[in-house]
Amino acid sequence: MTANRALWGRDLMLDYRHGGFYEDADLVPATRSEGPGHLTDLAVASEVDAAVQAVANRLKTRMGELAPLGHPDYGSRHHELMGQPNVERTRNLIKLYVLQALKREPRIEKVIRCDVTAAHAPPREVVRIVLALKLIGVQAPANLVVPFSLEAS
Image 1 (cartoon, rainbow, N blue to C red):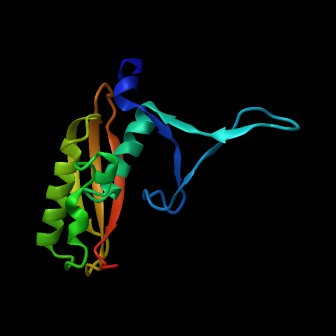
Image 2 (cartoon, helix red, strand yellow):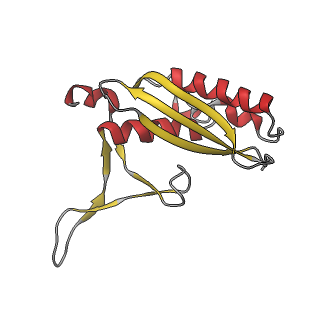
Image 3 (tube, helix red, strand yellow):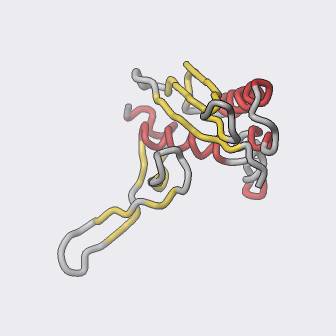
C-alpha cells in the first residue's frame, strides 16, 4: 500500500457524524501529547481512508464549484438534477453523472457497482447512491452509500 501513498494523498480527516452518509462533516481532533498543557492537532486521513474521503468529497461537490480555485472539472453534475422528480429517468441521469465524476478520480481502478435507488417506496425526494469501487492497489472493494436529495433548495 505504501507505493500508492502519493496517489492517494493525505487530507484532514473528516467525521461524518449523522448516519455516516458523508454529510455534515466536522474536523477530527488528534491529541499529540497528554497531561497538563497537552497539545491538540487535527487528525489526518491517509491511504484508503483518504481515497474514500476524496471520492465522497468529489460526489458532494457540484461540478464547477471549485473553478475559482483552479479545478473547473472537479465534482459531479448530478446536483443539476435537484428539483426533478424521483423517477427512473432521473435516477439513470444521476448514475450517468456519478460515473462521469468517478472516471475523473485517479484513485479508482474500476467501478464495480453503481446503483441509484429510491430510498423509500413510494419514492420521495431522496435517492441512495450505492458504490463498490476497486481502488488502485487494494484487493478489497471500498463500499460507499451517498445520499442525494432531489429537493430544490
